[in-house]
Image (cartoon, rainbow, N blue to C red):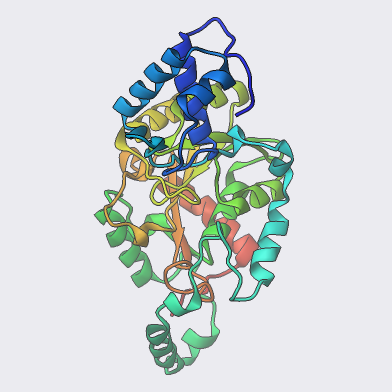
Length: 352
């Protein structure tokens, strides 16, 4: 840590030492297991007394953020919170082109790691089941193999999705569900349905990078809200609503990408209350639902598909080559979404 003073009118010197250490943990300058500066070294760096650092370290130890090893010093033990890109630099990193990232990920070979992309290695996918299903499909009648599907998509699959959603507390009839080619296509259709160029959209910070690329294509203004271990930072969310009057908020509730955080029921209720007051529509992307050990809170379950639209796909858990996603939306929206789907995709792939 570079030498500097702890200036400012708010809080005691002990509070400010604690804040300085927590900031270094949050920014990954100190990770779990890392040794903190010695009491003498930190006192010299921050230009405070050694007794101030001792008290700060003791309070951090009482909170469970650090622990003392007699004769060896103090070490970080707190787990890392999901990283907020807004809190770190250099700011140039914020200008990285999301379309460039997508191209690099799609063009790279199987041997290249693709952190943040969200897809699994091919060897982890259910190859045997896919081959068996394709053999059965090859024996289907001519219309199944060659004709368009209906705009809403295959009814048995929509019925299956309705049952799966009910297990997570979401009440959606098959008539409220429309099949899409992917989660990305679902968001694209909803953006066509809801946005005008120049509208503001809230996303999590960090979020899946292709959200930025998709929203750029719709000429939307994107505003990030820091994501915490329990969901979006509610104070920042409220401030963004006040400052920007956004039209949409796009998020993951379960197994958040890329942080892995999980939305808490308390945060879900607070976010929905703020969204209702602001007239905000929420797109809840549930693409990683099958990776949950314990089901998390769903905004669509609390909201009843009123101003929350629930989407997902099977690209991450079945196959990216089997293009199959879905939208569960308010009943009043379905006819308009069907018209848009016909205009942009005509029919549906999902006859099989």
